[in-house]
Image (cartoon, rainbow, N blue to C red; front, top):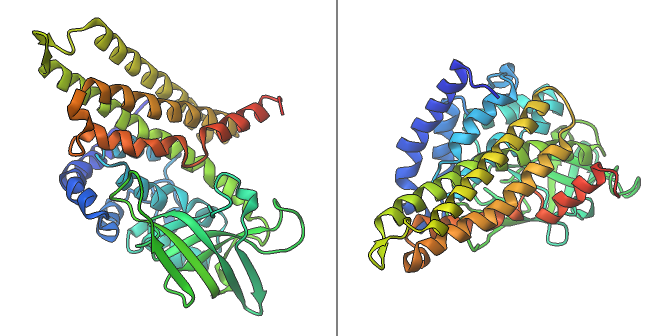
Length: 380
């Protein structure tokens, strides 16, 4: 892809917000175990970064998806994976179906303030027994007159403790099979019957993650996104943007891990010379950077195909898989070059090592990506 003047201006705006309003605070947010989601989303919303490709009449910029990626690649330089995860949920994971399939009234009520950063959203798909197995969702929404009554729970929900609403995948029928009995709904999280429990995690300490329970939660039927029982397909569409987002922001984090390691190993000495002045070390770092550039090329090819209206399931899954493998390998190798300092919690490389363990799991585990790719290759 080629960046135009407008792309570069958008990148500069994002970079400025990251450098001035986010990175100076991430250490404190990591220590506190939560970042101020409403404050950060409002800053991003005021800059127009939460609805770049969304319809103009609902507060978006109505630009093509390449502009989303210009922003996403800069968000990858946020020094905490948890914060960029939360922003991704708000901008590209809980809103695509609402923007594309929601009624005008529902979009005015929920999409407009989400794009503006006035409310925080989250995505409710995973459950205790259905992470990557989306078809196995058990939460049920029963139609009762002009309402739906929801019972069940959602697990591992990013933004779950601070969010004002959830884009939730539920079973809305007891018939039709697991791929034709699901719906997406907007669920206000201040509704009676909603309870939230905060989860502690290995990494992403600045991101609040919740298990959410729904006990006879009543929402108006107008909160249905699109058509009833078509939610599985809508969610599969949303997953494409989710996977493209997680790849795009991960590239910056991987690049920063390599750059930080080069700087540290150049200054660190052992046996009378810098650690960097060893062929194995600088060859390995060169190999890492080569792999990142290969990932970027694959990623940009997937984005261009998405912009062109093509089915990018295979390419996006390939990029997600490649990123997941690099997310496990690069931080681990870099950390070793830091020696004992790499094991200290205060160093950014140890945070990157912890945080990027999720990259091989969230948004579809590596093995699920291989399963999708194999299917698209006609092998299954």
